[in-house]
Each structure stands twice: as C-alpha cells, then as structure tokens.
Length: 345
Image 1 (cartoon, rainbow, N blue to C red):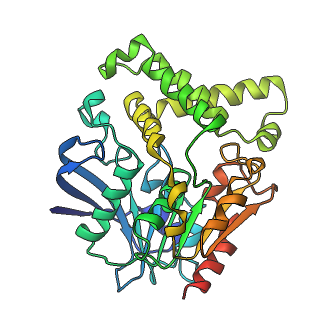
Image 2: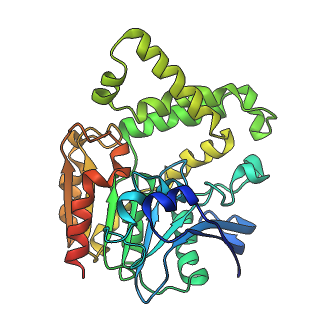
C-alpha cells in the first residue's frame, strides 16, 4: 500500500480552536474489491488527522451523505470538541477524519470514470475505512467511533463488523434499520431526478444536468427544519428568497454523478439483523425535530433494546436544535459524549 502524506495548515480553524494543525493524507488501495464483485484498479481514500497516535487514542469521525472530513473543521464542531480541555482534546486524542469512498477528495465518479465508476454501498465504504485505519494508520483499536447521518449509520455497522475494535460508539441522527418509508421515497426523488433526466446522458454530460437542481428540491425537504425555517422565512417573499438561495447554493456545490452514487449507496444498508453483535457501549443520539428520522416511528425505542450496552437519547426540540443538522452541533449533545467517554475510561 502507498501512503502519501501532505501536511496542510488550516490557519483559520487552527487559530479559532487552538488545536494541533490537521495533516492531510491519501491512502491508495490497489485492486479494491467491491461487495458486488467489481474491482477498481486503484482506490484512493483521502483523510485528515489531528493530533498524535498514542496507543488506542484514535477517534474516528464519519461524515454524512455528500460531505467530507473537512466539514468537521467548522468552528461549531471542531471549535467545540478538539481544543485544549474539550471533550476530544486533540492533544490527548488522535482524530481521524476520512473522506468516504465516493466523497470529498477520495475516489469518486467525477474523478474521471463518471457512471462507469463501480457501484458502491455502505459496506464497501466501511471496509475501505477499516483498511485505512489498520493498513495506513496501523491502528489495532480505537477509543471511539462516531458519525453523523450516513456516518452515524456506518457507526452501527462498525459496531457489528468489528465489535471489539473500539471502546465506544456514538451514532448521531441515524437508525439501525433498512431505509424505507418516506426516507427511501425522498432518496428516490433525488436519484430519479438525475438518472431520468435526458441531460444526464448516462453520466457523460458536459454541464451539470437540470436534474441536479430538481434533486435539490428533494434534498431540501429531506433536511427541512419546519420550526426554525419558519422563523427564518416568516413571510411569502422571505420563503421564496430562502428557497432560491438554498437550492442555488447547494446545486453549485454538487456533481450529479457523485450525488447519484452517494444516494444510491444507501441501498445495501440494513444492520438490523446483527444488533446483538454490538458489544461496545453505544449512545444513539437523535433530535425530535429530525425529519429524516422522525421519533414517531419508534424505531430506536424498539431496536436499542437489542444492543447489550446501548442507550437511546432523544433530544427535545429547542431553540438550539436544527432538525437533522443537530448532528453537527456538539453544544446540543456534547454532555452525552462526555458521559460516554467517562463510562468507557
């Protein structure tokens, strides 16, 4: 395996949070095998680390659909967790922030293969993450695995597939069951908006197809925060401006092939059969205003009982919660992370 390290100083984030400078790297896996039998001649996983590896002090943090590890450097996340004396003090812990397969600066359809890129699923993403941790970073145990949204779902998978590899697990904004109901229907809206658009051209478009903008409509309502958005857009004209700005900004930051693959990748997700395999203490944290994982479905109320050392925490709606996006606000759920770390000292 080849390991290429490039040190990158993120000056603004470092100055604000006063944690060690992130170090970026690329891990190359030749002939990576996918679960469906396909292979790719070279799979590149991009990642960042913060701090120094010492024994079992690694903290793996996994991002959501369409995101990247870089997103965790925002002040509202890193600035609340990685600084001196904070819960994940990077002078004490070794923070690992990978870009998932198909995301960020890792290998993805827009890297050149377009729709010829192998179809990947969450299982492939977790396998690649494990190889990064064990083969590139040479770690045999982690202090904590945690993740947001898609990363939360993959945290459940880590607990099942590598049950003795970590001290603790903290999935945020997720549920440990197959994606179905409204969640699946909105994902289909996003997928079909791109795949059924003649401008998509089987992935060989020269300009982003109009279907990408249509996909943003589905994504917007998937991530909607009714109470907070009504405060931000209390009139018809304000709502129109909010809508136009949200769709335009998001569409400009995505590639249609990448987004299509990212949402299709959730199709193999279903950890429900193996929840009893999880042995590490697990705190599952969701927010009551999360439109992706509405608490009314009672999924976690039921499934957490099958996790030997599991605890379900439902954050009540407040002025601080932001629906599904609450997963990235440690100010709201940090106390529970502290309890989990104390429990697993």
